[in-house]
Image (cartoon, rainbow, N blue to C red; front, side, top):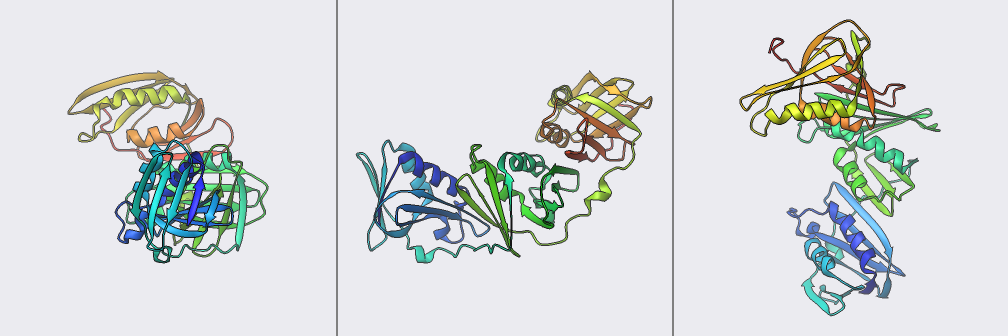
Length: 368
């Protein structure tokens, strides 16, 4: 095989597919990038047995063929390349990478060693505006679990209903729901690993206009910005999250998001990786008083809000969970609803239900 490719084009391709390459794979071949040249294009694939990322780019193909190239060495060489890059292989799977006067020779692997990439049958497919998709993912994936024995908590639930799309993330301590009205007639529901969605959003350029989603029984594929991401689905019946959403409220406030975030961050100076403590708020009239006590010390702050009731409340919450939710709102102001110190805190837009964020409270001393 021999190909010549534009430096920026090949660097983008290798950087993207490398996100699905494991640096310490059980199978050494999975530490490499699959490269295949045919016609006038080159295909690059990274695969870790759970996620595959694939892209095809234009190339000057002098000789067709395929090879597996170590991802780390490939990426390091491209990082210092200054001109177009050539890849040349021989019958013994030796690889020569060259750019200008720079050249390295390394051992490659036969493409026959590479595991078969799942083919997603086009049984169900939908398209979405990429900007909308990215925003919906970012506003739900934060509420999924990173480490949990329950795999359902590690994924985002996609629900396609008549003229509506809903994404849901939950980890047992918080819930994020994102709704969007669209023209849609399909009824679909499936769970995608949060890791897959995070990698897709990271590698896809904001210039992408649409994302094409293809689904079969076991896998899902996303195509956006020139990259295809293929992932296993998470099996199981999703959590009955609707029962967690409060249907009543005792107190409703309107608050500036940035003010609330800043106050939490200031009192969170008392919290470290080693020293944990909840943030306590006391709401009375139109003032919210913040307080955090730990072995580090004591921090207090206060902000103003618009309180639509005469009730007062004192409760605590995990600072990170509340910050994640507030930062995901993408709003200047939000509504926050409270029932009691032990009932879920609900965050929504001032109008509509584009998002619903739920944060479970933490027990605190009421008279700190």
